[in-house]
Image 1 (tube, rainbow, N blue to C red):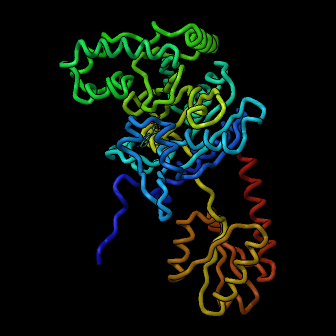
Image 2 (image 1 turned 45 degrees about the vertical axis):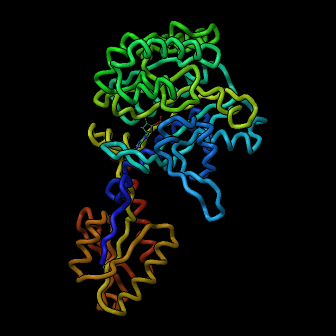
Length: 430
Ligand code: AMP
């Protein structure tokens, strides 16, 4: 028989890793809600055209990395490579432009890119995504940046700093792109083949090329911040003013451009100690032109996405403490056919009383007890035939090892009592 393996670039998230994920989902949702963001869920697949238009035909995400296919109805469908295009589509399609502004939205879920897998780079990965729609003020840029910052901070990441740039707007960017192209054409033999192509098709991307031979040409390239129009310049100045006032460290990084075409004005990343640029965990910025490009009314927007796999990686390497997932406190072990049936009835009674419980499904008494211990049960109920004949079951406190006999028809009440005592004891100890 052939053995199946998971498709290249995908991962199984096993139970032992789930505490990281549950904790992460809980933290991002809690902080986002505390900032006034509301959840939106959009489809995992959309019409291919949405991403092609929204992200740009010549971007890597669309040109090389999209999971695009024809469905049985001959429609061109693609798995989402990111959230923003779908969220903007939903905003337009559901008439959300009439909502009071700003509209603050967040999402979590899988995204798909056909990339070469490596550490922290997968073909199916997960993002936390947040956007503010409908306001032009740099306060919105600040708000999403603070949200990203707080998420890192809450997770215990150290040495946080923003990387910050402006990519201009349709007013000033063409002038900058011409200057960049002139510079590159004067050095065209010195740069890599990709950049020779990029400078025509996707010029800003030459700035984040990692090839050694391109570095001197990048270092002497013109800088967009010197060529911003008045509107972009004042937007950038106001945002920096807020960051200065809050004492939030940031580095102006003229090489920071995002891989997608839709960005205007602000682009940012958050870097943390020990992560570095290659492992950027989060990236975002402003995309004022996107809604119009997707057929909607002009809608200023700013947001960011965090790669959740990369966060989990960093949580592990930095030893971030995470709470254990709660286990059902009660475990039933049983000996013999009659006892088993009785234990099944007890199991459902206990669950009906709102107490988490599970039952041993195989093994000797010893093996069952060992399993109860491994599963972190606080109380084990031992249902044996002799005891049952006397109308009793054994209740064992797994922490102290103490055992008491309890009348079989009083088990649920005894458990409820035990649960409230031990949770009371825990509160007192805290
Ligand atoms: P982007 O939409 O490219 O700005 O990506 C936002 C964030 O998503 C990045 O900072 C990464 O943390 C994460 N990310 C992007 N692509 C991948 C991938 N292939 N695998 C895992 N995480 C990714």
